[in-house]
Image (cartoon, rainbow, N blue to C red; front, top):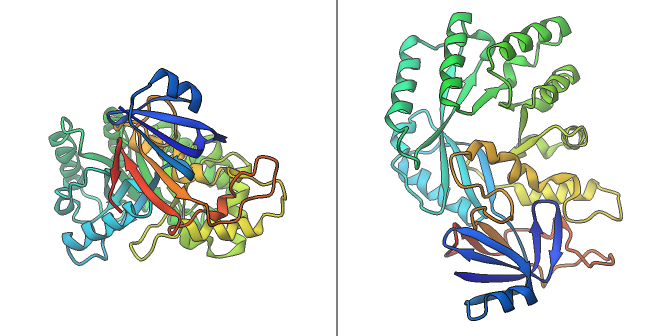
Length: 358
């Protein structure tokens, strides 16, 4: 066992707490206690102190497209670069997903995305999908989700059959929303949503491109507990940032993604959003932005030990940010602002109770 003692812990993805430590037992967080309590209860246990650090959950990359990579070596290299940004959970899409399934990085929980396209799908595609899922069903290290492209173009019989298969094996579904942008008629939207709901296709699914959809679509997204997937590239405009914050205010569950391998923009987006915030009392968890790369992604990794928040029983996967050289928010608790987090201050990444060498 091992005790880790930072200055602040972002506990349960709800609040920053000071003068607390976590007890790690193997890959799991066994206890979270006040420093004086943990010293007495676990006297003699090795302890690592991080006196100027914030401890928070590691991040999730919920959709990464690797199709522009030249080969498996390049894919692995770029996946490892995510670790250095504090990412330990990854959903990756590749047209040749079988080729990259041999990539085994112990610090990462990896979910492979199998894409099916409504414009080109054949019965053989469904058979290939079911064969792969059946072959790996006993291998917990190989996890999958399904991405549906051009969902409105699926033949009704095929989409019913596909939904039945996916519900039987309880697998997560991504839906590409670009084909829905031009559908604005409320009656048409109601018909589609009703049909997809009746066959249990979209409930609790993940939808790409939500910011570009009409307000009526967004209302249905909230009703069906659909998670809106938003890429960092979409948040390069102030208009889209305000749409994103509006979704959060309406309590629509959101997930932030990089989507491409070109860069990892979480820290940049945090700073942009923070600049738009005029609330002088804003503290660390403003608008639950961090939840969009941590706890909101938990269902995608439901077959792994939970690591989307710092709580007892979860996987001991966390990031440590040294903020000793950064400006602190001037409030009574002297809590760090969200915007001070950056790659430069990320000094340690822990995954499943082990420290990753940066």
